[in-house]
Structures are given as C-alpha cells and as structure tokens.
Image 1 (cartoon, rainbow, N blue to C red):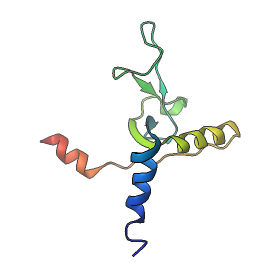
Image 2: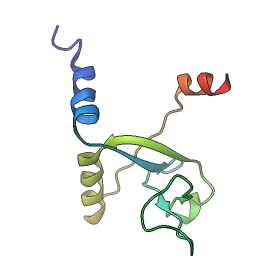
Image 3: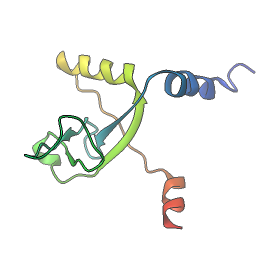
Length: 102
C-alpha cells in the first residue's frame, strides 16, 4: 500500500509544495541550455528569449522546457563544477502532442 502512492506523494512534495523550477534542456546531449544574449535583452529571463546548447555539435538541436526541483538543478550545477556532467533525457509527451493538435 505504501508503494502505491509514493510517486505521487514525492511529486507533490518536491514540485508542487516546494521548489519547482523551469529550465531549458538540450534534446540532443541533455545539458542545460543557455539564454542567448542580445543587445536589447533584459537581465532576467522573459518569454521571448531564445536558448541554445553550449556544445558546438548541438547548436541546432531541439531545446525543451522542463520542470525540475530547484535542489536538483543546484546539485547538477555543483556536479558540473567538479567535472561531472549529468544529462537529462527528454521524452516526448504523448499527451501534449495530441492536445496541441486540437
């Protein structure tokens, strides 16, 4: 009985009640995407911003917006500072594709 609802409980505690954070991830390599700086861009992220992958071989890859816990983002950045590059794999959401088509 405990294992039945633990995934929903963890999602609620880590994302909805705590520190949900949206970021952009490269669909090819799984690294965090960077915001493209323009002359007229604001110092904070806006909805019109463009994102790109920092790796040269992924420059034209698909960038996806994902929601992750802020603590996970910090852990990934700390691992990157130590030379470990964690990757985030992106799966296409079958429900999003059908709802956007209608």
